[in-house]
Length: 492
Image (tube, rainbow, N blue to C red):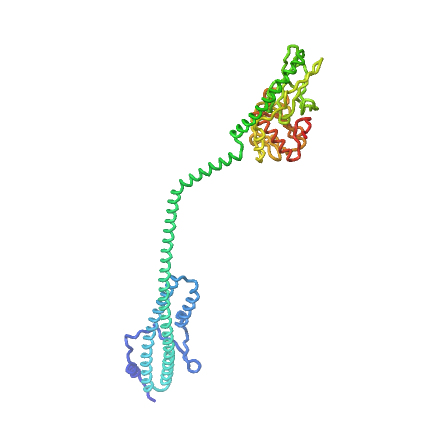
């Protein structure tokens, strides 16, 4: 048995193991710990959990990029590709560093194995077995290192492939960004051109409007004048009324002249027959609608009219039956439209006798009144300005202006926005002229809207008063209603 001393052993180890180069760079500050597993496989006891596989890292990055591809805009996508390209470059650099470290590891393992082979030939016994076990471990480490180098080469190829793909994608993204930028610039230019065209059209429109404004105003004035002319043709005017009235006055004057000659002849005959007969009363006033008839004494022996009972009548002719005019018991009477064409009579009753006086001829119509009423009939509603005198038989405290509406279906009396009466035409409605005395009788009207509600109001003129009565009776007749005064017999 050979005995080895300490000095020899130390000298042998120094001679067998060559020194390690100072340029070697180790991945770790300590030597890794291994053990022999099944099938002589070397298993690492503790794995570094911080360092993950390069292949898994690349797969995870690729998956994240594919998931976010649909959500990213073109600009963000280009930024991601650039980041991925930078990451791929970084991974490639790390792979080169690992490749250099792997080469250094192979050199180190080879030197260790050579040293152990040299040591195995010089030792024996138990030390020799330990050296053999160490050689087996070194060989296993070399095999495992070779496998890792193959994996690194494959990962390096995948990294290069991914880097090329990311580089191409980055270039495509840049092209897409440039195309989108050019499209956006083209759209902006088109929008600017459209805005410019709109502004030019607005300026042109303003210029044309200013040029044609005066012409449109002249045409509008012509249309207004034409509309006024048409309105004057379809609505009654004072000029037209005066023309009709003048024409009717001429006809009436001719008839009056003939009638005057006839009366003169009859008067001459009457004077010859009855020279001794004297008349006590006579009717004074124009025998026409709109006038004011008054009884006056023409003899000194005639009784005072205030002491007599007076009653007015109307009849078709001198010998026909006379019709009582209800309420006409004064010495004055203003004819109303229903008196036209009839002779008016008045009976003066005293204690001793009854005296009858009559108009010399039937009451004539007012000149132009018929045409005026026909023009009003064409309207749906006509307004008359009136002054309220009495309401339900009570004098109004102060004369106030009201408006009387005469429509095709109803009549209404209002003051401003306040309505005093509004009734449809019915059998209980009455309208006629005032049958008492007074100078305002030719302009006053009695209107009973319904039973228990009556008014007396005055119009602006006799013509307005008679037109209102005729218009109301015309519309009521169209509704199968005969309007008349109190206790009057409807005309047939």
